[in-house]
Image (cartoon, rainbow, N blue to C red; front, side, top):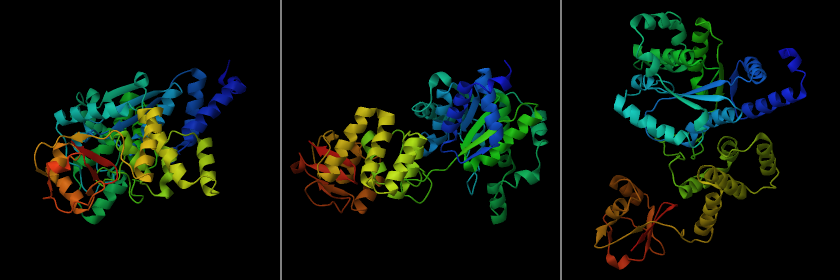
Length: 413
């Protein structure tokens, strides 16, 4: 049967429409969109999965919900039978991605890259299907290239094009240092697509220049050029800036379920629809229902936010935990109670409050403990706030509960 005749098959058309509806939802831009639709149609007709690429530079060990936006989209592709290809940027991480930065990012050692990559993948697999995921390191191909290859790649683009990159252009205009090796970053990302034979590349809207470089290099190599599918840069819990660990406005994959729930409940109401779209795993129909219900006030924002928080917790920890965290939250913040399951610390002698908070692992460092005390965020439940980092916790306080911020508790035993 010809592909044209297959187009007339209602079931075939229905499957194309189903996949397009799901895959387009929440996407900022598909370039070129008509090529994507043809590519998907050809894939379904020939039962040949698309290869969907997304790269990470393992520059740290932490992944937050913002990082997962393109990987959630990759999972949707996987659920439809397509293949996810995760590129570990062990070469680009050693360069330092200038995208969106005013200065170049410090390069990392190979040992640190390997450690970070392992931790990254453990967190990405909270979303991705292991059986349909290829993990590829850039060193697989870049370790064997020579100077001739590098010069050939450089000869396939122009300086004028590279300095039209928004970040490069801005840094030149501001007189900020721009090293030659940084300008190779988009070239290397583009070459990745040639080696892994990507059909679609996922990335944030700030990655558009780099992703389109992949199309150029694939064309030059005589291959079908990939389609760019760009996702938005999501807003952090503060409601004003992008989600970032450095800004402390993020929800971490490794955050505990109660901490995730509490962070969601702390977001401004105006962020709810954005978080429903990108974090709650709801389809377009359900999203539209929530949007209408919030708009006509038939759904109270507080109820909507609790449902959102439960959905996010359930995604990572299971439905039962999602329900349990909602009950705990309501107990703590509505009934002014304390969660049932809180850490305990054995107080065998007098200690200053900062030592208690760090030795108990409730806080990571004494510097953080001092900051929380200075911010009046540390108190004894049913007692006074602790206003000095030299406050001595005596054994008379055994049985008391220390509260830090809105969501952390410690029972002294």
